[in-house]
Length: 294
Image 1 (cartoon, rainbow, N blue to C red):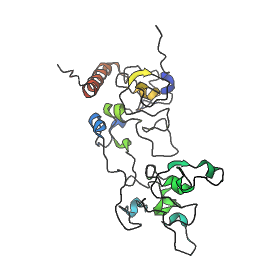
Image 2: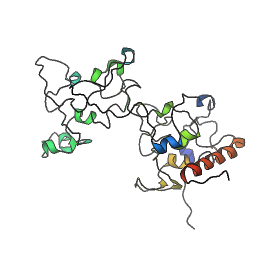
Image 3: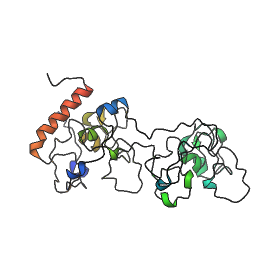
Image 4: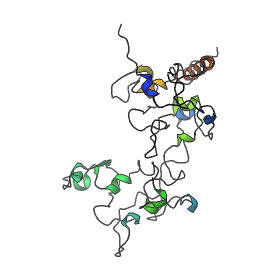
């Protein structure tokens, strides 16, 4: 019989630390859990849909102590020519000044820069090109707008027109780091949301950053697979495998003195049986409809 090759757990836990694990588990409680994921966990930071006829009217202006950025009406931003003939900061102007900052309406183009534009060549598709033709079209896509935090909110060259969030009131990404770090969190939220932060420690972050730590929100089998099919029901990386409901906290930590709060292994033998039983019962009850209380 062919023996399945499992991922190396030492690599997964290379930079983990157990110190202060229990003390750091207390976080603000918000809507979370299996039911919230299955039914769609909504937050205040949902996608913008502006219905105003006012060209530059925003949905909400943040208090001054939280930053000066605003939420723009992307249906009109940078789609009308600027009539200001005086010299001014074009990044902080809602109108376009030439091909370098004009946005085509409709948002039908991808969030990828046109290969002809990259080579500084004339695009043969012109207005109908399915790729972004400048940085403005690239950054002010609805699916990207306000999904990451600005690294310099106090000294931002875009000012109130910045395409990145200056505080948590503007962010349109679900901030799962504010969730309670319980078993429910690790099963159905940990590493399932793209990280809104830039230039930080990816290994100790609860968000995903690339295919190496991205966990899909589908029911998976606790087996490793090397394919690239996103609909595949096998695990595609170490995080999907070790945070699977039937694997999580069932393996003894190989480095108990060098791991952190997010370690998927167990450290206390006395707690293992209770943890595993709780996880398996919840997993079967929610996803397979099996009542384990009979």
